Each structure stands twice: as C-alpha cells, then as structure tokens.
Length: 315
Image (cartoon, rainbow, N blue to C red):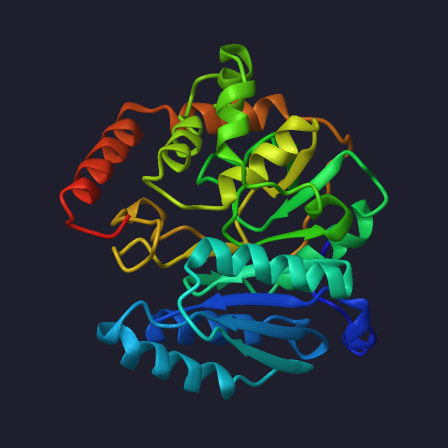
C-alpha cells in the first residue's frame, strides 16, 4: 500500500531513493511545469535529480535551449541537482539511451522523466516503493507512472501487463543491460505470431515503430525497451489511475503530435494497493485493448500520421 510518507520516511538518506533523471531540450514552459510538479512530490527533498540537457538542433532553437539550461540550473527542492549539458544535439533517443545507461551504471536503478510530464505529489513515492518491492523479482522489469485513461473499477490499485509505457517510468540496472536498439534483428527474427502478441493481440500497431526505425524514417528508443522486456517474458507494473499527465501533445515534442485525449487526465494521489499476483491482468488488458482499438483512436492515429507526413507538426 502506498500513502503520503511520514516525517520519518522523508528523512531517509537520499541514497536510499532512486535518482530521478530528467531529459530536456528546448521547451521552457513545459520544463518549468515539469520541474514545479516534481519538486512538489513528497520525496523530492530526499531525491537526487540529474538533468540531461540536449544541445540545439540549429540556430533557430539556440535561444530556447539556453533558456531551458538557465532554468534547470536553478532547480530547487531536491537533495542534489546535477545538470549535464550535451555539447551538441544528441536527439531524444541517444540522449535517453546514454543518460539512462550512465545513471543505472552508477546507481543501479533510475526514475525517468521527460520535459513534458506533470507528476502527482505521490509519483516518487509509488516509484520508490515499487522499485523496492520488486527489485528481487526477475519477472518484473519496468514500473510505469502512467496508464491509459481506462475504467479502473474492478482493478487493484496497480496491475501487471506485457507492454511498456514511457511517460514517467523506472527500472533497475540488471534489466536495462538487456536494452538493444537493433531493428534489423527484430525484423529478421520475429514471426507474425510474435508480432501480433507484441501488438497486444492486434489491438494496437506497436510493430510499425520497429519498421519505421528499420527503414530509417524514425530514430526512437522506447519501442526497443518494450521489445527487450517482451522477448524475455517480463512484466510491467502500471497504476490503474495515472500518477503522470503528458502536457506535450501540442505539437511541440519529438514524437507526440497534437492530441487532446490525454489533456484532462486525472492524477492519482493517496493510498494504492499493489497487485496480489505477479501475472498479467486479463481485465486491464481487455480494457486497454478496447481503448486503443476503438474506431476513434484509430482515426486519430491515422490523422496524426498524415499531419506529420505533411509537416503540420513534428514527428
């Protein structure tokens, strides 16, 4: 069960909590909101914050990148803050892959956020309790702070399923070492049966992201972390109601187009009961499949893809 920490819990040395890694680039207002919400977390003052600030893509975003760097250097409300300024533009995928690899190598576990994620005050509590609870359970690979906006009735406070969500997440170094960004191998090795299961039994086309990376159309990271977990039969823990809201569906991000369906999503705060059994929840899976596979979602996905191809918002 998770609840607001007692004053004694809040005094636990920061080394006992997972470091928070935040990836930023050139969105000052998003970054400001992300930092403010994170600093309002109950465990923020006991947690280390490591910020990887990517370099500008070109002269057109030098000003925004400089503003973000000045903003994060002034971040307060954490045990310690360290800012790593990339000397050039790494791009989101390389920045995250190298940043996560570095921090889990140093600390053994990590909580990961990007610059467009607003967290509940209970987010860090949930993440740290889940990391401690499942660290020695090899079946559990990934902790998600976000969930699809499905009906939570009848579900426990959190559940396990096969897919990975990357809007506020955590893992351990011994799991992350299996990460491999190799689309060619996946395209060569996986059969249609495996691909269908990867696509949550055909409800959502995750596989197209692998194909887009293989073709060089995209360069992303998250789909390959999901693939690493999936190939090894790992499970991902999700809260039934999100601790995280994505504010980046305004066309400003690298991989999110304009989509208002997540904008008003409620944030969970209070007590949460962890699942009784470490196995995939059939009920949660059915509800996520129904939500992702709805005609409205399929239409929105198609329109978003078309808009990106036409250059109406970033891909």
